[in-house]
Length: 212
Image 1 (spheres, rainbow, N blue to C red):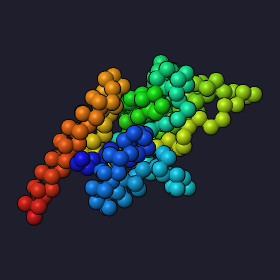
Image 2: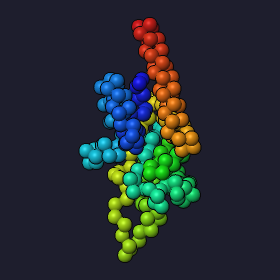
Image 3: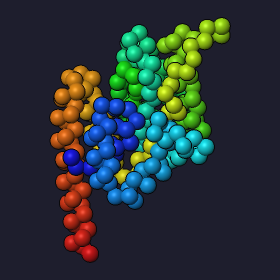
Image 4: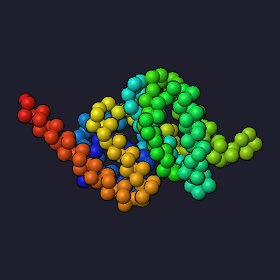
């Protein structure tokens, strides 16, 4: 399968059933691209070793954000509480001046595409949204503890190119289709989208080589 710079970390952190595809994509990526993307990523189950490193954030650029919980199943599912998720997301983003460009509720994880102008406010958005959502879904309060709800620190990645933005747009559309039409439609769409991005990158590489 053609590589897609903007998909590999997303899949690795959120879709267990796609690990084989993800490994194929990783093998195809140049090491310099891997290092660059990992340097702009933070959180998630695969990046726990970077907990003591400051979260890389860039004001004015698009960021991919993932909140994930394996406990968000059945009555604790984000989709079961979709009205709560939507209202809280709207309220918290408004409070901290975070622009939500797109988002998708996958039941046990949430994907957000966001922009912001103030890093401190954005960090407060991440912290308070996660805390309030977990408390409201689990019903936890003083005297009624639930325990750890989130799988790990919220995942964020800075997008620094139009190519990455295109990849993320396709990935979000694939997840929207999965939500409404199932995995088969998601996989069909993403296969076609990956092929489009691959051809686009090849044409760009050819034009650069020709100009040289």
